[in-house]
Image 1 (tube, rainbow, N blue to C red):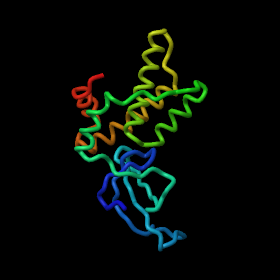
Image 2: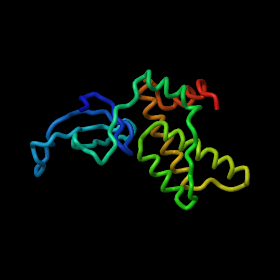
Image 3: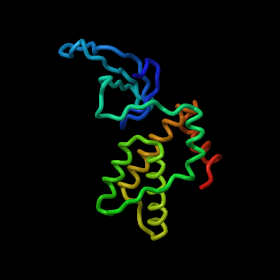
Image 4: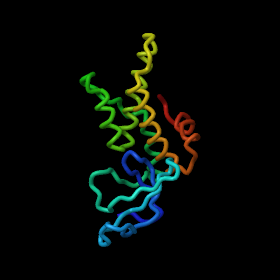
Length: 166
């Protein structure tokens, strides 16, 4: 169970801070069920309520500062994702994002970056699917690392570039 003040990853909402734990204060909602009240760190004026026993959405603690440092060191060792069927590329992108796992997000970013580089070299445009999932994966990963490292999101990319050999 998480505590008030904890930063967690909450599915596609990304990093959220838990602001309350208790029954929902709404009519028609059972008073014996406990909920997390969370505020997404990067979505303004938003609040999320989730049962503490929710199994349908990924909920996990953000990396500690040490875990984030170790993770950044390991980025160059993370392989691209293997996309077997071209027709299922977007589905595989989506499934990768839904895992909310930093190593899979890095694999996705590397996969899409390679594809973007190849398409650009051939004089082709970047597909909307590639652009969309690249942005989502990068935003989620950078958001978590920013909280873990106590940095602004804008600082994290340069911080990674200074520490990772590509």
